[in-house]
Image 1 (cartoon, one colour):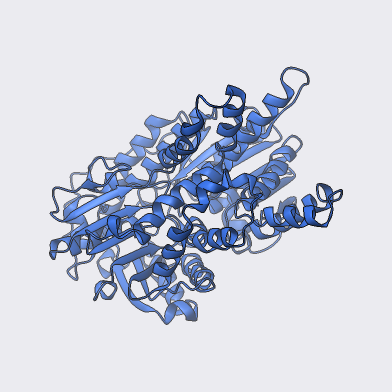
Image 2 (cartoon, helix red, strand yellow):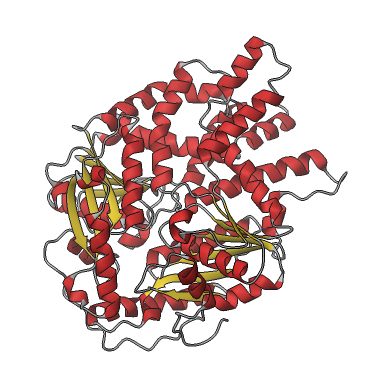
Length: 591
């Protein structure tokens, strides 16, 4: 693998969610450690699953992987980091300030901005502090899905510029003094990221047009802040041993076309191609095989039990239609096909004569590519973070800034340059979409899990503000209250029949439950088991899904399964066929 040739101290793996960054980062760490290097593997993903890959409890402290001498790992837990950050600020004044003031400070530090800052602080330390990284030959970062990664890597420059300019009115950042102490750390982190001698950025993609387009966008966005990718890994390419049945031939044809037409910027990078493995990348033998040039031996799947599958998506759409309006949230880990499922549901509801608004909060979503053309009764939009932020800034300047003098307006404009402004702006547009669901169907293709949790955390913060200010004086309904009401909101967790996506969806379900939001149904997407393949290779892959399908059904009262299609699920007709279940061959009914 060429991305392993003469590796520098820092290696980053980034790309669209669900492309296998964690597996490749873990395999790289194992390979380097088994060649005698001292390696630290770090996950900066809010939905990290390093522990599952190594079958070991890994938390927010550096943990040795005893099975691989020389290898240690760390998961930066955003919530733990945020709690520690809050305590560093609140702790010194506890007992000195009145309880009311302490509560106000704590509330200010309870939103998504604090989570972002806290994770960022820990992330940069491993790039800038020799005391932390000096004991290792290599530090490998398993980064978050693309949108999150771009934001994370942009933050060093953004915070440094913001602090350097002396903008002291950034209320959404929390106490600025706490951030100002990190100025030199941020600057050092930026320099490390820009230095190709110290840092190698590896883009990871599937042989899919959307995935390759996404890493091309990532490459351009990072290049604008002086961080340049040098390598690309095309992961999970269907190998010859998958056979030549119709499904395999169609998938292989799509992959070939995507690789032949990949963006020029990506095509010019040093490239490695990793074949799809018949089994999931969990455990050391699987990880070693991932970067090996030798194809793994095909397991004997002859004893695999016959699986009973959930029903089609059609039954879920029938139930959704019963209320005649409402909010449908398609949530889950990146790369599981939320855009496809959201679009299929929206198209079918429109075909049944309902007004439908389909929108996305995912910066990596491609609704236009999925739909191909306009659909009668279906309105499509996208919550664009850049546009939302511009509109928010303009509105604040026109309202709050209207009565200020020139110096005051200048200070307000500087405050609105804070990177946290985007979170507030996006949340306001999200709230509008939630409000519309009182009169029509609103289907939202949400961002990858980390983004979604930040968004819902913003909803929670807004809810607490309203409750505190309104008390029992007036009747009110906040966005969070709508999300918590099953008669108004149906949350669908989208997953793949693989260990990691199911585990992450389960964690998301637990997080939602703590916020008082009960997921209404699960959808297993792109299932080989439901497609009933014929080749031995694909049958082994399919049989591996049975355990995960059973696990999903144990976690929910409602489940549906959508097979991997021989054709791409794009365009009005194909999307509607998925929602109608006409392409699904499944046994059993919904629970």
